[in-house]
Length: 272
Image (cartoon, rainbow, N blue to C red):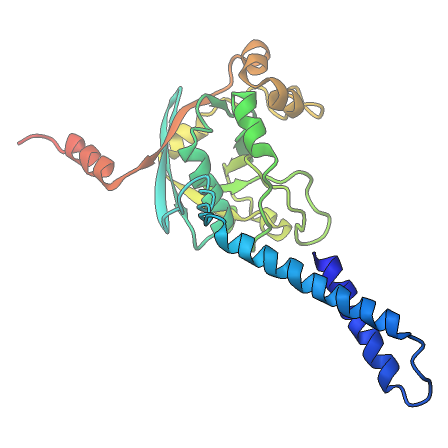
């Protein structure tokens, strides 16, 4: 219909231009002019018929926008990591790194960390985790990279930070490849700050449990004798349980509510 309208407009424009041009008489004959006017009339009739058809058609309700994967993370929240060798709790603050903190909140809500191993643990440096034990769960999140955000906190002992593939040679990391892998700093690794590694949270309870994470396999393959990350991504815990049975792991990670904390305080208070 748009093509017909354009054709009619062009015909009328051609007639007017030929009639008003002061230096050259119109090359159109009376027969041509009549054909142009007829084309315009046909276009008008088609447009009128379409308008009547649209008015008679039942109204189509607008669909609701697709729901987000999870709700917005609170400004501050705590996560209890229940591990095979004990529990530790970490606090996350949106003001530190809002993009990363939202991702952590979404992962916890989705049950991502259930049975997830600490697959790369280096004494005195850090404990790395964040590849799901279930390859299907990992595949769901792996292709959702996060945006780069400024470093507002330092990678000191107990800070939790998203890992990035390949450290940048430049002072600041500019690649957008953070997805699900994180690490907990064992010591002062503030040299990572200038590389763009932005901490998102901090261990506030149970740092002794973090210190006890199994580190016997050391650096991962191919540099060390630890797990190959590619195989972990592909086969999950089937590969890790077979080849690296001593790895510490997270049984589950849960958001700690105010009610949970109140109940814990009650249980710890001795009866009079």
